[in-house]
Amino acid sequence: ANTGHLAISTLHANNANQAMERVINMFPQELHKQLFMDLSLNLRAVISQRLVLAVDGKRCAAIEILINTPHIAELILKGEVDQIKEAMEGSGQKGMQTFDMALHNLYKEGRVELEEALSNADSRTNLEAKINFG
Image (cartoon, rainbow, N blue to C red):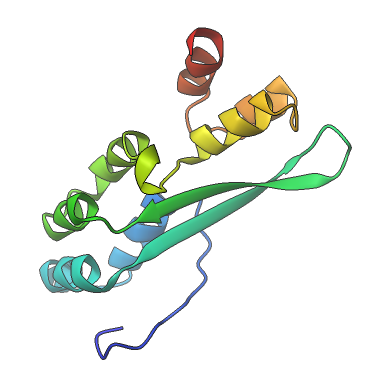
């Protein structure tokens, strides 16, 4: 990616935050500052999916989308990866969505049962509150 070429990769992680943390932790601590800078400049997006049980008995994808907006790039550059989820939650209009947002939409559309959505949420409590109180 540093040379301008598109690089696509897969990684086993529960969500975009964990994917970022796993990449960072693959390198020794003394390289983290450079890695944060490289990621902030070159990362375009992180897309994560979970296959959840749909009401028809098949599986459907709950998709989390992290886009490297200027705000996200700033958080990455500062090493504040733990604040990315909160930034994503306030950035739906920018094409981003968390797993909990995706599960909420699948539930509202009648594609998944309530318990299936809640059991796959990153924060069961937050998703339950969003479903019950909007």
